[in-house]
Length: 373
Ligand SMILES: [Zn+2]
Image 1 (spheres, rainbow, N blue to C red):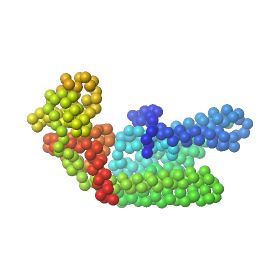
Image 2: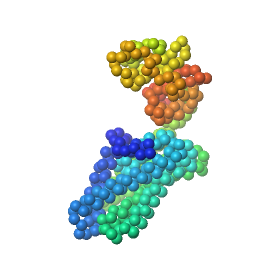
Image 3: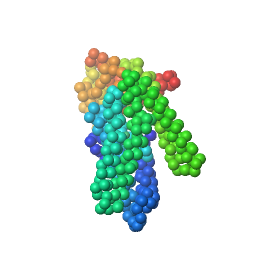
Image 4: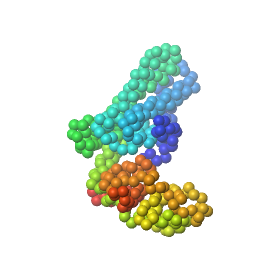
């Protein structure tokens, strides 16, 4: 759902991305602050002053939303859970965690860090407004605005629905009590659906009452929460479809092998273009020497392909990431995502017995899902 996002920065090893919908909300916010909120609260500023202050306040709000997300991400990272990126979009921000939290305590800490940060930001900006607001109406206006919106952000995010932090806090508590992640997810998703419908209903009544924009906005958020709650339930089904499978169930045993001296041109023609393979295994009399992928070959200029043997370009066996034959399939799927791999060899007693490719694993998943439904 975040297609089209672009990267604006990298902080603490995390890519900070912006979705185009955020620019829309930023422009709308700057407009409504400059033409609505600030003129209503402060008289006798120039139009230029309203717009400058409105735009600065909108951008600073963006910074405080980012602080909220960074709090989630840094707590996650400190607990050893990788966070490749943070995306800012129309409803605020989302931190992409590479896997589900491993324990109720971990999920609670990560989820609670965001709203806690928003409340701290609110307190700090409020105190700054008290201290320095007297010097300038403009500074006071921005600081009070940031304080009040961060209180609202903290409260809104604590609503108990996915994917809001409150939904995760609720799940971590249910998880701790029941000891079952699956049961807890179902509980939290159910509450989230209830809230989604509730917000849509309230929005509908506001709309009937003539509050068109507010009504539509609430209905939109409700619809979003509903979709997120259902998505979480669907993920759970996916996990249960994969739960009983291990690497050897989803691997292929007929992976293509080549001899170390075979030139790249022959490999490209016969295996990659010819059979649609993205990787071949380099072997010598049954012993695996390494793996050669489309990406490895792309690094070599085309005119050198006929004279370059597979051995010269392949990733050496000791540097290839592998999985054990009995690793859970769900872990393999996450490993492929985390390391951005297209395939991973499967080992049993140190011997390579198969290859799992991302494409085939996803096809199997879809099949398992359609059969489970
Ligand atoms: Zn949050």
